[in-house]
Image (cartoon, rainbow, N blue to C red; front, side):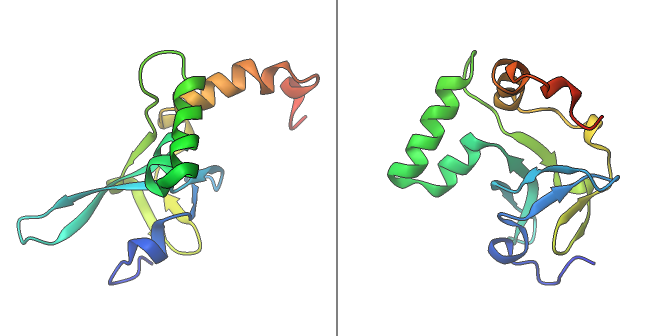
Amino acid sequence: MTPDPLRVEFHLLDRQVVDLDGRQVGKVDDLELAVGDDGALRVVAIHIGHHALGLRIGGVVGRTMAAVARRLHTTGDPQPLRIPYEVVKNVGSAVELSVRHELLDTPSLELWLRDNVIGRIPGANHAGE
């Protein structure tokens, strides 16, 4: 059950996001908001990724996080995983999605880390066996 009213700083930010099967997708690092026809703010999308978190935190630590994310990203600016709020099924101790993880894009930094760091660790390809 989604709380009413929804307080983004309490109910969404830094909450674990899980897919339809209960698998972890990441944590809510930032939000995309829009002004509705009635003038009220509404959540349009959830953003997951180091670059989004760094921009949200701000200051020296946030700028450093965003710079590291940009540096590790191979082409252009790193884009966060953007999850449309329409696929959020429930907001509780975790943010539950109504779709499977495979239907979501994978942030480019996560792909780079998987291919260039995690994938080079001996036995990393046998996880879960």
